[in-house]
Image 1 (cartoon, rainbow, N blue to C red):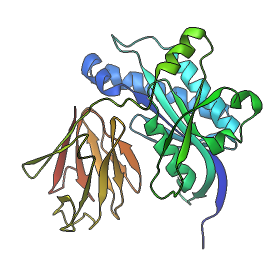
Image 2: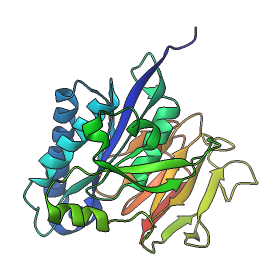
Image 3: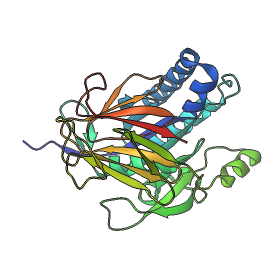
Image 4: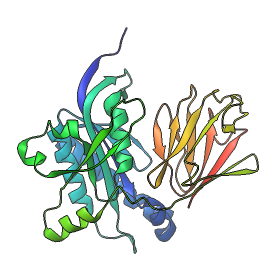
Length: 296
């Protein structure tokens, strides 16, 4: 029986700067601060009549009945977290991407579909303090919210023939804040390197080499020998100044960020941060192949 398809606004919000927070404040203090952010994002979702689908590490994924509801929740999230006091020398912030469109709801409550893929991609375009959406979603907003948006770039999303026009929702009202928001730019990604170590061999993702495929197939860039891995298991690619891990496997991809609990990706994406370990089809505790990564 086919799973029902509906339309909804999908929102991804994640804590920016969490790696630095763990380094400067320590694991317990950092986790408590991030947990507080997650609670705020959950509360804002509930207040806007949304539904939290799941949390992955320091990221929340939610759905809303309309583009306006998602925008309202995003503004409330940013406003509330901006009011939090710094933790040590670190000011916590979040980045948000949302998109309205068709989704498919599974029996376990999870969702997938075009709107999910686009929202996830938009959240990776956003920087700390930004709310990002697409033109098609802006066109569904009320006049007041629509007037608070501006086009900032266009991006190509895998699986979509046409480029997606990216808009920023200007949620801060003061002149100083608006100037600060306007100074952010998705056109100026920082120079970053992802260092990968597998079976004693080092691989680098840089400006020149932007993606690696992983799997048991001998044609993969990183050949995985673990019997639980899929032939085409997944991919890591650079998106602006971030590195994103995408799972395409049957048994999932297990990720342990240093200082965090292990999470499992199942046909999902995760932005890598700090230092950690990736295993294929089974937990790090039992895996035969362990891919270590360092974001630099």
